[in-house]
Image (cartoon, rainbow, N blue to C red; front, side):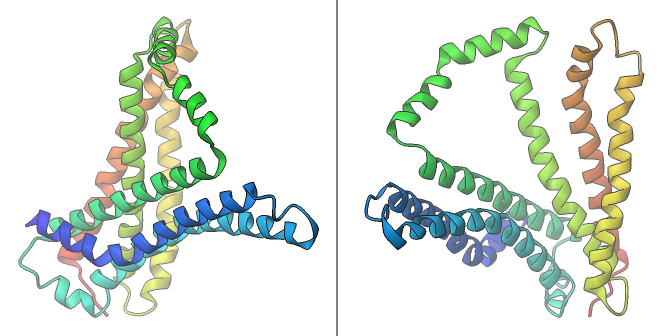
Length: 266
């Protein structure tokens, strides 16, 4: 049933995200063509590439902002508004409902980052620069990087895996913080959206304090030896993964409990 819910979420949100991401890529290609063209180098026409470039930069920022707001809108509309009456009568657990929305939102957030990266590569890289980039990531260079990390006690592959896991968990954390804030906000009989907005910052402040405390612990523990800086970085990624995962669990538990036991729809 979870797979069906995820599929439904993708179908419901694709109509928003695909046009947005397609526009970003097309605009990057258009911007590159205009910048490269000699037609706009003289007279008043030289303002056109500048204007298009500015529009492109705005579109990159807008891609992330709109993705964020669409994630918020989709969850709020389907879980708290009148549409929530239909959502919460589905023969599935609240846990699966939240998971389906979380997985969908996380994948859209990842796709937004990939699209932004692709558009930047389209705009700023030509064939020669792509060859240089390919050379930089060649097996010989990667081997040198791996050897340098190994000399400092790091595993190249493990470090990459830990970094990817941390990024994915961090994305989930920020989405779940939105969900938890909306869940708390819907407990109010009036001004639910305003309350959700306020609790988003309250949760952010609390979790930020907790995160800073957790990340500082290794600095004052026995993990710091004579090579303290290296030992600290050995623990930095794992500590970040564990602490962020725990925050995800807490925010998920808050969201799940409230929507399961304290539902208060409009």
